[in-house]
Image (cartoon, rainbow, N blue to C red; front, side, top):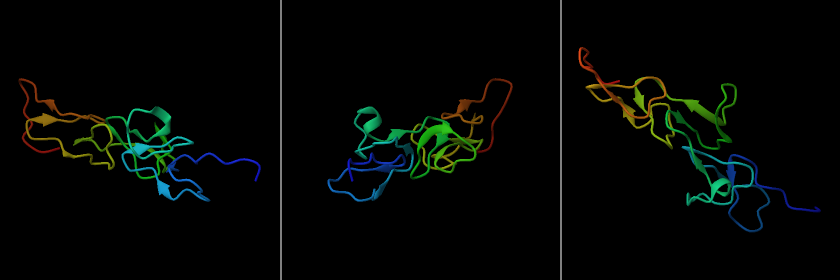
Length: 122
């Protein structure tokens, strides 16, 4: 082999002498080509990048862009749930609390305004 291959997207290559990537990009994050660490320190593309608020990323995600036909991409969270940055499932950290409502892709609840009420979770 004339040269080493960059770690494929969706994986972390943080060891010497790898013959194949052994570690997946962690859930809640996406990993570009050449990711070398699974620690988030602010080093940019060399480490996993947290998915944006209102989306979630399954393990081995390649991109934070929502692509409906790609299972290794960010996905839109379910309506009625709180999904902060770095969410790893469609229900984020749980249902929108009583007294608030959570529109699609909301990462924080919006307080129910005057003249309205929000009696239920979600």
